[in-house]
Image 1 (tube, rainbow, N blue to C red):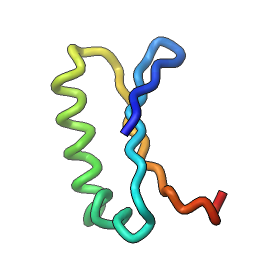
Image 2 (spheres, helix red, strand yellow):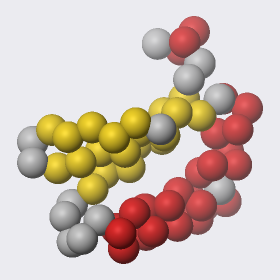
Image 3 (tube, helix red, strand yellow):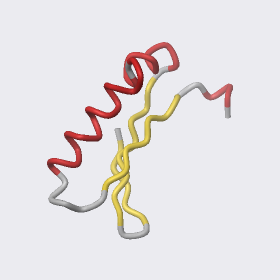
Image 4 (cartoon, rainbow, N blue to C red):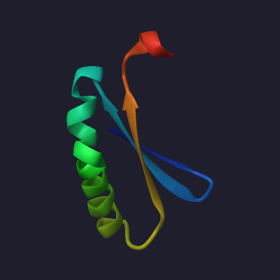
Length: 60
């Protein structure tokens, strides 16, 4: 994970191995939505973006 700040908003990058991508995103995006919900709750009302990134370098 890495926290970046750009354009007056923070972005949390979550890097995931391709084999685990489905688990992190979850069925219908439920797990990803839950991660976003928790981060919104602790971000003091500031906008925060969560990016889930596939670490498979062959796809880039």
